[in-house]
Length: 252
Ligand code: SF4
Image (tube, rainbow, N blue to C red; front, side, top):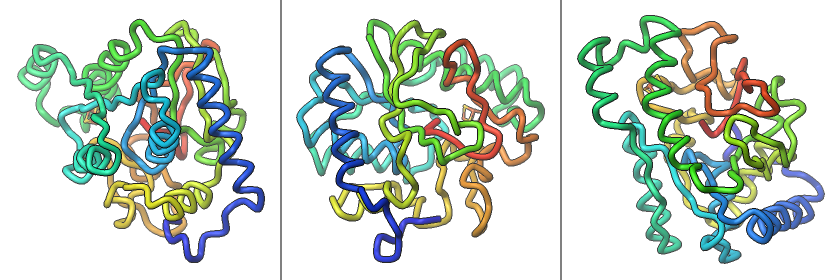
């Protein structure tokens, strides 16, 4: 994991990379408002949150997170850090209580370990349905996905059309490396999730995320008990194709 700015080798043209990202977010604000940043409260999303708030775009680009009810305390603490640092309240979208209750009663609180189908059902209740609600009435959404996070994201574009949600989807950090992300965070004193310092490059729900060893894929700690081919939560459908997460991925 690369979160030590003193040693990280960020892009040579880092300033140009940041300028291009600011330009993208300003274009989203100008041309696609109301838009939203879907933040997982992980490092990439903190970079985007900082840019949105630093450039006063929050009236046109809202920031929300999917509060699944199973997040780490450290992840929830980032919400307070954002409030303290920027005075901004991240909007929280929670699952429908009746759907959670029915799943827990009929399948079990942690039934997602039992099969891919039960895991996807839990992700649908706690993530996909709340995401759909969060995107209602919006003209575009923004994620912190990066091309380098996965071989399956090698063709990730900064701007894509999300057929499933019938709106534009922006990935302003598509060109960024992990080093760039951490250089930005350290250089700008951006608040970040304490789990990143404990071996968690990718952070999701607490029971479905674990720390990784040096050299492992950054997504290796997500749904580690499943085959790589099933590692998706249904949040990202672009150009009619589900964006699968074989080795590494979002913000989701
Ligand atoms: S990541 Fe795990 S706990 Fe979170 S919604 Fe998916 S299956 Fe449920």
